[in-house]
Image: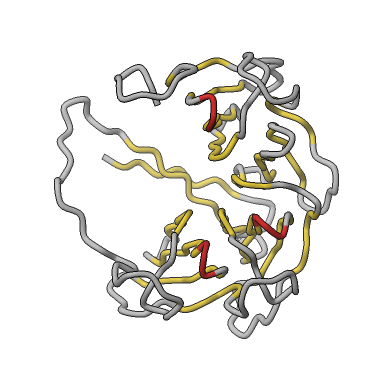
Length: 242
């Protein structure tokens, strides 16, 4: 059963929907999925994808995908054959109308814009969702970002694989606050080895996929070290490993 909580934002006409899932312990998943985007080998045509990385499902059943190796963000309506490019698509590059292997995209509903981790350009950029937008603007540069999320207070959380850290930013700030890691590469409880995917809950606890340590860490707000919630220090197929 899905339950939805509506949280007002600072703009009186905008709300952000936070959906929580109540999944029974005896749930059984459908064994065969349905293709809703791509699936026609790899290319840069608008009905195809090349290494899709992150997906955002919008309230009106629009899917927004970071199409990483096509260096673009593409928007797809449910049941449509072709997507529509909403950021990038001018080829791989560093210009403001280009992206280079974008990994993550989130929607800032207050400004109706996309915020994108532009991976190999080492920057975070913002693109308006209005039709006809020709280029983005740089919010942060010189950052080795991978994961990117926004909480219900519009803070950005970004995983930095170079400094093995997760930082929190207010939009417009150039220097974030360290919320996890940041003590060099390692496997200690206060360290990461390439943090990638991240998730932030309503208590501002940060969950981090600690890629090369083969574990998932939880850092509570204000904590100086994390808690291992999945996996261990070694890769493998056992139920205790990730």
